[in-house]
Length: 179
Image 1: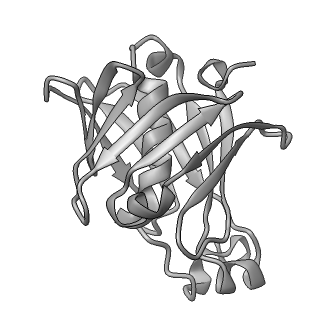
Image 2: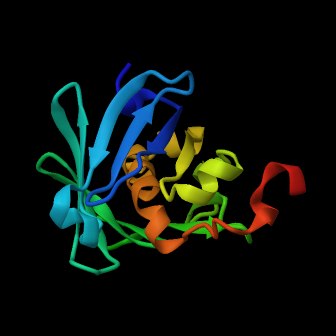
């Protein structure tokens, strides 16, 4: 099944030194696609997403900038400047609503419809302490499925979210046992 046909998937960060890499998997762990920054993108929020050897999505951000454009091939999808999500013409489509612990992220359209959500997963005390690569479960709602570009923008948000909303790795209140 193609990535953008999935209603739920997991975006799992790999440990990285010079570039960020994320495996995009089904919920049962089957690899669907890979997103990577490359050396230049490490500082800029630029990513390339590859599925079956083909580039399916590109994110382009300025060095140390906050605004990132999202494109699928020649087609501009929109731009993200978290918490704002806009279409290619700059019309605001949605806002990212973040919980107090930076673990639940809801994408809500300007008309109030919930388009999707991302949940930052707890990986255990040791992994959380030594590894900055986060894992997210991404879900698209029926309202999100009906709006063109939402699936692509949800994936883009999952790749950018750590830079804007970093998890305090030493905050024990984020563990499932303390909730």
